[in-house]
Image (cartoon, rainbow, N blue to C red; front, side, top):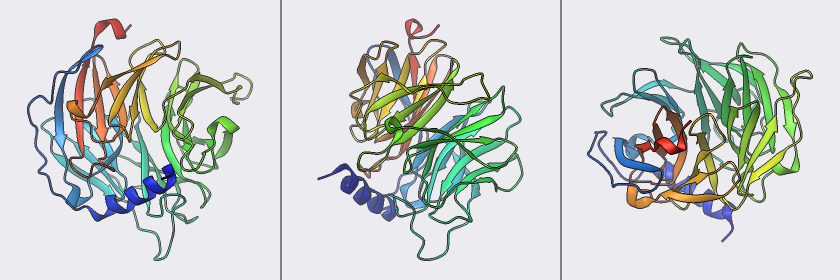
Length: 326
């Protein structure tokens, strides 16, 4: 069965939301080995309410903001594991078809220093697809429109420039958008970003003078330099291969070591600066099709959407050993 068929079938299952789990904090999952340890559940989420976390951003007080992919919701998970919906995005007109996934899809989320949240929304319609923002206590609104045939997925914020970078999984493009709103620019468009049957460019982070992007179908980690000549994109560099079904990722510190979510295989891989990689977390640690990762200090937070397992969407917290941090 092709990857596209596997995932489209999973998307339909995900919208069924057939099982129910209470949002609670539990004890440790298992003791992870190697550079990560002390895996514990921050929260178990409720599939009946559509709580399948697609992407995660961290709050200063220890909580996390997440997008629920197919329920069109942005939610905050408090340190005690409770999920509170902050906003629900408007549905598209009946009969609308989102590229690749069919259903409306809420993807990447990032948080600015002032508490504003930005997130990517795809509906297959020109009036809703694009980048949205939500100020504390406010209501969500679209700040940049993207094409109806795009699938904005990963989202990154370059704090110094105030620019947002959007990984488009359908068009194999990285878009650049001012965080204050405005017309998007097709910042990078290369073969390395394109899908090979299902999803191309997926997760994205700004790190050490470059935009780093994963390609789910091609199983790669890519680096695209941020040039000083008008803020353009430099040549695409492939930094790691052999990571098929890689979703989102996060750097563990100041160097180029990163943790990558391998969605279908219920794994998190440690990818070293030289491109070598090894599995450091599995389903035995509580992973349920991990979708995204965020790191603060010595802790990594991993969101699992349970798209294939249909069992336990959750958020895990794990300790990163000192040798993997600067």
